[in-house]
Image 1: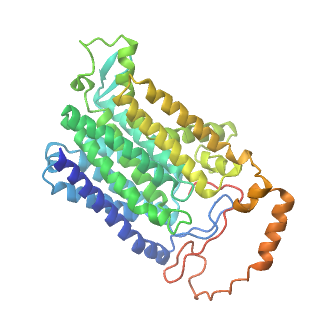
Image 2: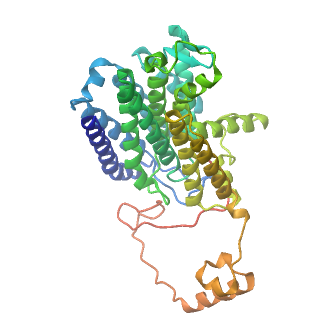
Image 3: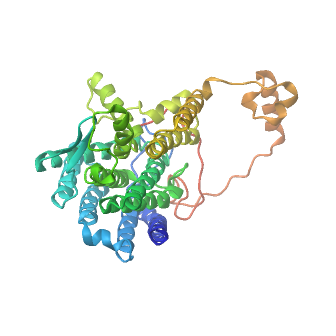
Length: 444
């Protein structure tokens, strides 16, 4: 088992390195071709920022698949299954449409059609749902048409869920990376723990997806130097959906020997089995919640479900008073809690400690959400040790005034001609930092 772990680590590292190294040149290319839309009233960022980060992520995907194809223990995935080729075909199509959208702003219906076609391409090559687990009934086999329709629906929903959550620097890539890490642990356990070869493609997809996100995140953390754009968000959404389809719709639960004597009517016996099988859906729980709330909110107002607004979950965190970085970290926390909580429960479903730990962490998460509503005041003797916002108003004002009088103004730096107006480090200039807007914007 040690050899496959090393090969997965090698694939992960190569994907990270290729994605990271390609992002810098891709950023300069995006600036050169003008893939930097103007600032809109609903946007959070303060400067025009290049998109097309999905080009680097697609390069990482191709590099990861190429390396895995030449490794001894992972080569069998390509020989015994057509799913990697199906993934690459669908990813190339959706990536190309995303690149065009980042440059020319395609219509939402055109992108929706491209998402459905990409899912159809994967279905034609065998990456489709064959059966689904149903509580208290068992495994239900699907007809080809039913499986294809369900596959297309899941791909389209996942892509748009990830696209909707891509509204703050580093948010989408970080959330997908955290949740995919939990998914990798579950898929690896299914493959090597139960000896089910059908779980091998999903395990490989998860490792490569983690590498794509980790390689892009250093360039995308606040303040972002480049956005992944629709070319990146739709790409990682499709890879995420492909991994979920591969392990949920093609791995037979009966092969895991989790059912006792074929009886599926006992609730106590069914629940621990059903939870692991829906784990791939928990990795998009937060993006899916955001998507559903956005559709309900917009249709209630008589707007198109694709109309941009300021009501996403991450925007509400900013309105509560959280900083940009803290809002992103809170979303990371909830994404990890849901995904890793499901993995832990699938391994030790009979342990009450896991349930209590998840409940306690959920309480901590709620406390973090409400943190801006509480402004604790410190005793007078300790006020010099805390930031001014935690001091009494009069003494805080005096301290701020004293700081302004003692700090010398920093000399202005010359700005190179032709490089202003680009968010983050320009091609030849330093990284610039600007405060966030008080009001949230829409997803990019």
